[in-house]
Amino acid sequence: MALKIELKPQERIIIGSTVIRNGDHRASFFIEGEEPILREKDIVTADTATTPARRIYLAVQLMYLNKDILAHKEIYFALVRDFLDAAPSAAAYVDAINQQILTGSLYHALKRAKDLVKYEQELIEHAKSCSLGLSENQSEHS
Image 1 (cartoon, rainbow, N blue to C red):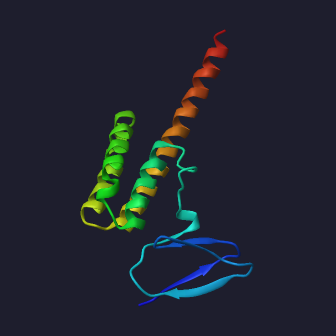
Image 2 (image 1 turned 30 degrees about the horizontal axis):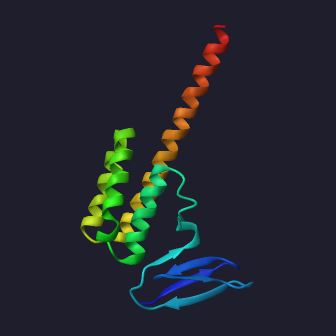
């Protein structure tokens, strides 16, 4: 069964190792085959992998696009170790990613890595709000 893709004007998509950019008009087409596919909104680049969870996502993305877990597993596991050292509460998210990698479901591993990125953002927002609360308390006591 073919996968129908609709692209907005100028939207990019990766099919296998090829980046395709749409022209000035909306387009739709059908993809038949087994090549990995990522829409622009799901693509993380080295420049946009600005947080630890985004770097983990990038490692999983490379596994998925290259169809090669072994080539990226060392960096992936190093990133995961560092992340879990800093945020042990993320273990369930990492376990979900690992389970998908172990079964060869790299697209699903990528989806679970996206969940980790969202969780990391929640941790950051929580830390910021706690930090603001401490600053306000310090100002009141001065």
